[in-house]
Length: 138
Image (cartoon, rainbow, N blue to C red):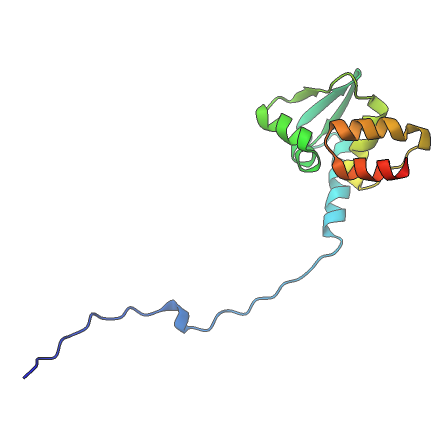
């Protein structure tokens, strides 16, 4: 006659309980509002953690914003934690300032004859979407 074998106890499974209900709420204006706030902080010099020197002009910015917007800045900032970056002398200050405003606003407003300088700076900063848009206009 066979003797019954006992099985090890089965631990209680947390999946026995029904999963909690979740919801997702969208805030369509959140990202643009956040960028506007960051731009306001930049213009007021608040929470800026890097100074950019371009043709003798000093502009303040946020490293995280620059790194997100430009592979050039991403790599440059990844290599060092300097509070000040000097940009190459071929970068025109007015064009760079226009692109910095674009980074923080998503808008580029400039005279048509300034487009080639902006295209050159955007190319140097590896901002390919800007390069493509400017190239289409030219």
